[in-house]
Length: 175
Image 1 (cartoon, helix red, strand yellow):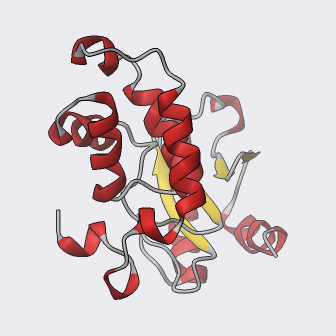
Image 2 (tube, rainbow, N blue to C red):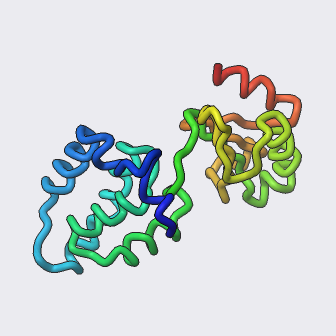
């Protein structure tokens, strides 16, 4: 990871930039029944990362290192979990996280054309965030709503039977 991933604007540490958020994360991790055994502590890694991402919005290397140190784990173990699970992100995301299901049912029913419309309207590619930090565009493998295929999720809201013509309506709801 690059130095750019670990620092925010003007080389200010994200943990120093948001001391209240750091304190909230630290309080949460300190409340866990951790021990000196890293194998036991590893069992708290995913929930600690969920909490950290919920607080900061993403998991840059600096926060990964903080979690690793608190749980007495190696940074590589933490990054391994983050890179395995698609839920976690190491880059800032927009206020509205748009995810198009790309599972089999959704793909067969036109998910690729829906992705194309979002890309066209937002002028970003999959995995990117608009410059104003309002929208992020991504994909999911399956949301378990195959009968509603194709499916789009915006944050926690599920849209079913989406067509390319519904994309502007979905984006309008975000305003």
